[in-house]
Image (cartoon, rainbow, N blue to C red):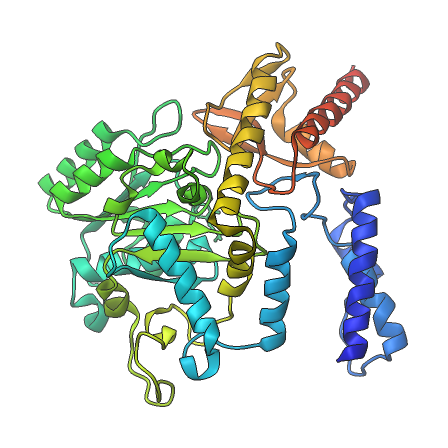
Length: 457
Ligand SMILES: *Cc1c(COP(=O)(O)O)cnc(C)c1O
């Protein structure tokens, strides 16, 4: 093991040096790259002398998503305390289902959940769990809503369901996927229209629910998004809570992207009323910058977690009470310790430090937004309080620009669509970035784009 840990240090050192020198890699074609790196597995093993350089080569050819030039998705950066926590979780190799095998790590997970629930304003009966990603925490919320609305489904399955659920057109694609998984069906989703900021329109939500009731459907769930994937918009939480209460719907908030605003006194107002939701999920691996994945779901009344996820298993739950045997409320059986990395970060910087991370990302977003708004070469599609800055530069098609930047190994940034426009989407979720990194992004992009357009004529 020590020998391999030395190798680990040496690979990480080299990676970090290379990241400084070359923060964005030039992409290579898949099959050629796999062959070059000798990924192919064979009957016979190889010696350590051959293995070490091969592993190093593999690491060094992997896209550098932790550097300051990565703006492509809703995660990024490398927080060292969180990374340390995650490395130790791997070395310990616990599973989180029982206190017998998780020990104090059960306390670590419970503390992270309890403190999050309290920031959200949930009562003491609240609880939660972690799942491998925001898609899966959405899935858990949707299952609890289904089981609460129709108790017999867990035993008898779904039959000719007329159950309908409501979410905005801008919500995450895991919702239709999950609707299919859970036997409700994708076609039972009613997509509510959004306003020009990308926020769900309450008049349309009310109208769709009323139409469905009229037609004999059973509305059971509405899902708000706190930070839509493209526009970074926040659905109106208070008004949705009113509607859900009145209509008797489960109210879930998908905060995978921007739910971490609960840490900030300055930005918590963006989810004002979130304590009225039945469930709330957020990804610490997005705004807070822990390693992937670290997805939490909080449930206002823990009863629903047990109703949907507890199953007796005599071979597993042999000691301690349900409160310490976390397998009773999780999606998986064996479950990796995703809480330790978050706890390591949180413990070291405090809640105040997490608030600073959140605030800085909004500051960077504001910096970028002011820049594009004040420059006539840009068409701007986004608004204040969004971590996604959406724009086009000098009428260059966004897909062309982003793909060429990637091909040239200059910058990793993606494009999105909203209300019929396609644009570049710059995200400022990399907690390690500073204003100068945003400035450099625009400098590089503009220089590249100007070259691109002159070479075209
Ligand atoms: C990223 C995201 C998800 C999915 O989270 P994963 O951890 O990638 O599965 C769900 N909803 C929203 C709004 C997201 O931005």
